[in-house]
Amino acid sequence: MPVRPIGHNRAMPAREDDILTPSQLNTLARDLLEGAFPLVWVEGELGNVTRPSSGHLYFTLKDARAQVRCAMFRPKSQWLKFQPREGLRVLARGRLTLYEARGDYQMVLEHLEEAGEGALRREFEQLRARLAAEGLFDAARKRELPAHVRRLAVITSPSGAAVRDVLSVLARRFPLLEVDLLPTLVQGESAAAQITSLLRRADASGRYDVILVTRGGGSLEDLWAFNDEQLARAIAASQTPVVSAVGHETDFSLADFAADLRAPTPSVAAELLVPDQRELAARVRRAQAQLLGSQRHLLRQWMQRADRAGLRLGAQSPQSRLQLLRRRQADAARHLDAQLRARLDRLQARLRHARARLQLHDPARQLAALRQRLAALRLQPPMDARLRHDTLRLHALARSLEAVSPLATVARGYAIVSREDGRVVRSASEVSPGDRLQARLADGTIAVRVEGDGA
Picture (tube, rainbow, N blue to C red):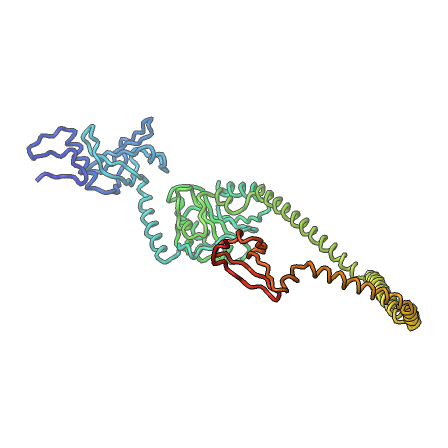
């Protein structure tokens, strides 16, 4: 039964008796190697070390009975912390593959370190896992750094590059900070105990806002003092916030995991601990400008309130109230005077009217009127004769009018015939059978209808 690599069938023959080319066979072998082997660790001695201008690293890993060709390409090889050389014992991690041009299998490496570091790294990983399981590195137990650090303890070597970098950055960014350098060994067998002792003493003093534990870069063995279990526990138990800046950006130690803040380098730690004095001065200027603006605004408000209060106080002073009462008194006096004048005018008018009525009913006036009437009555006889004459004349004219009046004729038994619209019928030819007419008699009017022809 033919073997088929998982996820690849490009070079597989269709039948068992198919013939493969060398390139197809190499491809099949490469796929088998890469699919069957995960990343592996190999310890051995370096041989045939070459580094061409491309920056790639080529060598063999060998022991007393065998050797393996290895390649480490530039993106990985440029981060090596040591110089590979003939005869150096190393620990390599990579994957197996096939170099098809020669038909040789080889390892493509992702990591390479000196063999002595391998044991230390395994010890480091085991200790880190155990302390992490205890919750020593939990984010919940980490303390926040104060917003403004006034006193700082720096635990490091007094002659190393790290302390120079830290002090230089602190002096440039915030020279007002009080810094105490607590000198200690940062490498060697007694370094971990010294660092732990200084850390506990600095924390117990209560003098410092933050404690900085730092040193420059180096190999894993150089940084091993900061992977001490007791130091990690002391950092975690510290009541004062602890910042760890050990080695370079790619270096990690147990002190970094246990600290409240890990900085990639000593210089970055100094920048994180203090503000830039120029930025702080700018913030102070902005705050001062805001404060002055707020003070001016409040001053204007208080001045306006004082003006309003002064106006109210002036309006409520005794002199102002007396003037107001005087104005009100004068207004009331004018109003009362106007009312009295109006009432007096009304009373005078009523008096004039009463005098006029009294004059009409004055006895002397009435007596004079009666005397005038009496004088007129004395002239009445001539007027009576005139009245009788006019009466007789009126009767004569009435008799003459009655003699020619149609009403007198009607009273003798005649009638006046008219149409409904009031026109008088003067001839029989003016009516027709069926016409309705009115006949006026002496004592009323009756309705009649024409029955036949008047001829």
